[in-house]
Structures are given as C-alpha cells and as structure tokens.
Amino acid sequence: MDSANKPAIGEKGRFYLTKHIWLPQQPLEDFNLKLSDMILRNMPKLPLGGEDAMKVFPVLGELKKSHAKIKADLDYLLSHHEEIPALHEVHPRDLYVPGRAWRTFLLKLWGHDVPENAAAVPDTMAAISRIPGVHTALFSILAGRAEIEPHRGSAAGIIRFHYPLIVPTEPEKCWIEIGGHHFFWKEGEPLVFDDTREHWVKNQTDETRVVLIIDFNAPMPFPMNLYTGLRYSLVRRSAEIKTAIERAAIGVPPRTAPAELPKAA
Image 1 (cartoon, helix red, strand yellow):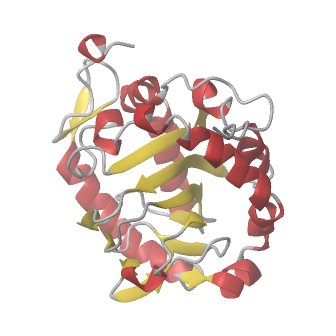
Image 2 (cartoon, rainbow, N blue to C red):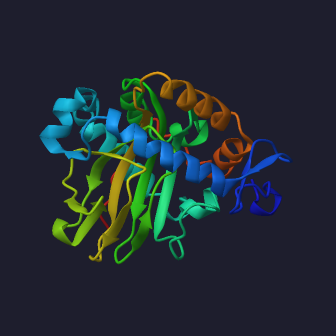
C-alpha cells in the first residue's frame, strides 16, 4: 500500500480503537506500568538467559531445534534487506531510531499473522506455531553503531523472548541493559525478560545484530488475568493493530525452496 494512502493512525498521544474513536495514550500507559509493577511479583524471576531460560521455559527448545532452518529463512529475508521497514514506519508512535538503522520484519502482531511476511519465512513460522500463547513475533535488525534509547513497554504481563540469530564478532560491544544489568547476545542462546522493565540497546560495532523477538502473555492470577485478558482482546481488535499490520506487509516473495547461493563469477 502506498504510504500516502495509509490511515493516519498511530500518532503520539492517541490510541485508536477505530479509525475515528481514540483514547488518550499517556493515562493508559501510566496505568499499565503501575499494574506491571504489581504483576512482576507474580512472574518468574526475570531476566533469564541461556540454560537458565531454557529450564524455566523449555518450549524455547522449539527454536533451537529449528535453528538452521530459521537461519536459512533469515538469509533469504536479508536478500530483501532494503525493503524491510523501520519500526517507526510501521507504527509511528514507537521508538524512533534515525533512518532505517532499526528495521523490523513483523510476522505476528497481537494474535494476527501477517500473511504476506509469514510466507517469506515458512520454517520460522512453523517453529513459532509450536510455541503456545505467542501473540507477537518479529525479526529485529539493528545496524552497526545504532542505539535504541531506554524505554519501557506498556503492555503489562508480557514475557519477551530474544532468540539471537546474528551477533557481532565482538559480542561484548553489542548489548542490552535490562533493569540496570548488562546482557550480551550469543547466537542460539535465548534471553527472556519482562518488556515493561526499562531496557535499552547499543551496538558499538560496525556489524548487524539480528534477533527473533517473540512475545506471549504471562499466566496471571485472578483478578489480574481479567484485566490482561480484556486488554488483549481490545488491543488486538483495534484500528491501531490493523493499521500496523497493513504497514508491515512489504510483499517479500514467498520462500518455497532453499535460498540459492550466488554463482561464482
């Protein structure tokens, strides 16, 4: 879809339930963050990385079992690198990183698949489908020398998986800080954290970092589960999500066979 014809939804300060009905963004985010601080007490101790993450979330084994196939999907996707949008092009209110230094290839958003994108990475989608409760999944592609400023996600009760696929050769120079603690990515070793904890990312190398991000709803005790369930239902049906999916669909050709290697000159 041509950008000039896309709905003007996602602007800062408003959350659109429909194309014409919106709610003020900041009070909603403030409430969710306060609620999140309460929810954290009922969640597994996070963040967790590597084998510790695998012990608490054994379902992550589905990603490791499909690692080579997911990497093949990614290699094919990166052959269309210039077509992949920046996050702020998909959802303008989200974090802004200059240019397209932080690109995102959305596969699933709040329970909705992005069919045009999913067809480009079939083995990745097959692995994700074997993980129960996934509501959002995307490839996060961060260029060298790029930085994602400190922020907190506002969706209370969300657990986030980072599954590293491409990590700079000097991993200690490409890191994420979560709640004041530094973590370095290692290919194939998952990192699990609560998205509402303040976190930020810095890539101090000239190389690209790629992680597969997967979000799912954490199990909540009563009555918090009533609120998180209602919020999930409202958000997934909102104009915000429908519009983000339209913007995210970039039409990379379906990958029906292993990507061909370039022929020698």
